Length: 125
View 1 (cartoon, rainbow, N blue to C red):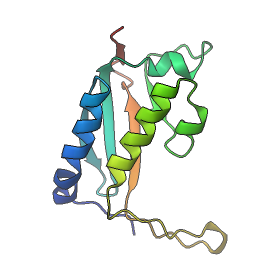
View 2 (view 1 turned 180 degrees about the horizontal axis):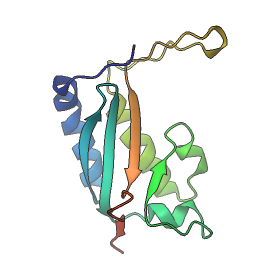
View 3 (view 1 turned 45 degrees about the vertical axis):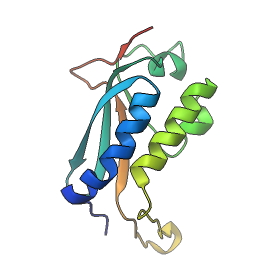
């Protein structure tokens, strides 16, 4: 069963903050429903929403953490997502899920949001 504690978040936070600082991003880290580690990106030097596509007309984005590295167009944004996801997973994360047999065993889920529905992501060029 997916479960993450505040102590786990405190242990992962320094590496996550290091990645955010390296790429000039500002964000917050939180736990949702005791099962998901969430990083909310508020502003930064990377145009995350513009990289998603010109037909995307919103000011926030829920990043697909399973395919974001493959779908990102900019190499810098690809490396940012890759480094952030690795920092969020840390050394103790595991995924023994087998959907074919309806068996779900994951350490915890991860979510990345660029902005939120009520607070847009700010790209600082």
